[in-house]
Amino acid sequence: MEKKRIPKLIKELTKEHEVFAPVKKESLVFFEKVSPGSEISLDFQNTTKSPKEVLFPQTEILFTYDIKKNGVEIEKAPELRKKIALLGIRPCDAKALSLLDKFFSSGDHKDFYFSEKRRNTTTIGLACNRPISTCFCTSMGGAPFGKEGMDLLLQDINDKYLIETVTEKGDKLVEKLPWLEDAEKADIEKARDLARDAERAVTSEISGMSVTKKLDGMFDNPLWDQIYKKCLGCGVCTYLCPTCCCFDVLDEATTKWKRIRIWDSCQFSCFTLQGSGYNPRPSGKERMRQRIMHKFNYFPKNHGENFCVGCGRCVQECPVNFDIREVVEGISTDIWRKKNG
Ligand code: SF4
Ligand code: SF4
Image (cartoon, rainbow, N blue to C red; front, side):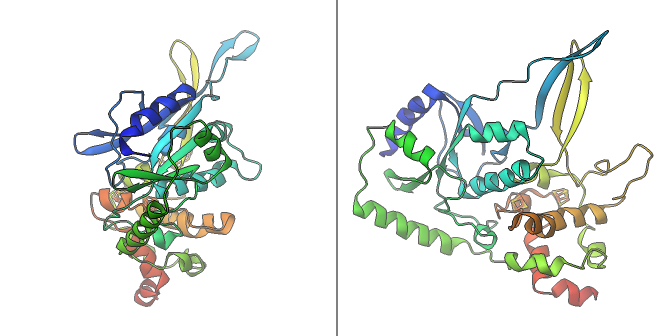
């Protein structure tokens, strides 16, 4: 597809979908709802906030209700059947959606709100030609041209995008775009070369896949006393993370009662604070341990892979330069164990 066809693609998508795509705001890029004619940015490293919030918003009204004399009357839940198209999602963030599928849709605890939106979402990804120094997707089972979580993958081959269909949903979408041109052999070879170069450009390598076993039996290890010290508990890492999904549920009364879900963070002191005043995670030590253990021990044990995709946002944006790669690498290679016994 010639690059100049992007507005046409958006126009086609908006016929059936709410379309979200990267939009530049000053020096930052965010996923926003777009319409034909919107100016989108497909020349970016990654968005500042992850696109998880399209499916799992920071604040979400689950339903409204009235308290009547005879009991509670629940009103209609918000419309979740709208089709969504996520255009320009990067491979790390698409992989994160697959992990969120596991979190929100596995076992007996299927989350209706996330699952419905996810079922109605088509991901039209954008391969990453220029990974940056904080990226470590390849250490987390991903790749700059990775297809996990994608329905279609756009690969930037200079003046055109090579479009690869990944799922049946992607095939069906392509059928609705008869103006796409057949790819030439040279286009496919070009994309293959770019994918290889991009993978080589991910210079951060950590032993991410071996950390799970290492963390077994380290719950009471003195290393946690060291690791957490510079953390401010601001929660930026968890809010920007494409896989972090802790939330709180509360009821709010204005003109009507609303049940609302809001993002929460394991790095906040009140996250586990109980009504009695007791807090099982009273200091930053326990809270940082929870973040690392959940991502690299509990989640892999339950779902078979790390709960981190190596997008590097937490490394880039932490105000005190806490680097999760150093922690994971230190644990994987026993540096922390040797230091701390
Ligand atoms: S962004 Fe940094 S300082 Fe803030 S909670 Fe995360 S690790 Fe701690
Ligand atoms: S933990 Fe950090 S690097 Fe891993 S997915 Fe979350 S924000 Fe990205």
